[in-house]
Image (cartoon, rainbow, N blue to C red; front, side, top):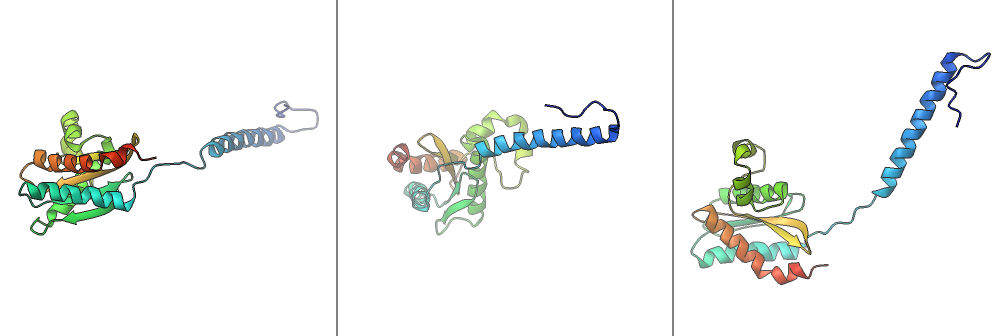
Length: 181
């Protein structure tokens, strides 16, 4: 392919520059078109509202059976709340804390307590990131191996109890998660 890089008789170097710019622009467009064509549509697993509701309810009920008034928030894979539940006597702040625990899971892909333990070196900094709280009580929700969301629980006396309620909720829907398509 002749890019017009050498000056020919009667042709100015200025014209060569235009040809070179055109060739570079064309090759860029080909590269972008190849990449864009390959990933224009992305399939992803999404959690239905009914599953999110069942997880949140199971978490609240598990804690209630242990005598704790809590809130449970289920977020989708993007960290957007799908379902929020607060038991009658749970503080209003438990909703925000539960959501921020769930968001820590979305950020890390692992339980919020495990994230806290693994990344103690940045814990204080991460707790200043809007919407993230590195405390125990957030658990990932995986369906057929894909992260589809997270549940955060807050209000029990201690994060380990919040996490136990979140784990019990996931156990309650485990079969549905394992056989999700």
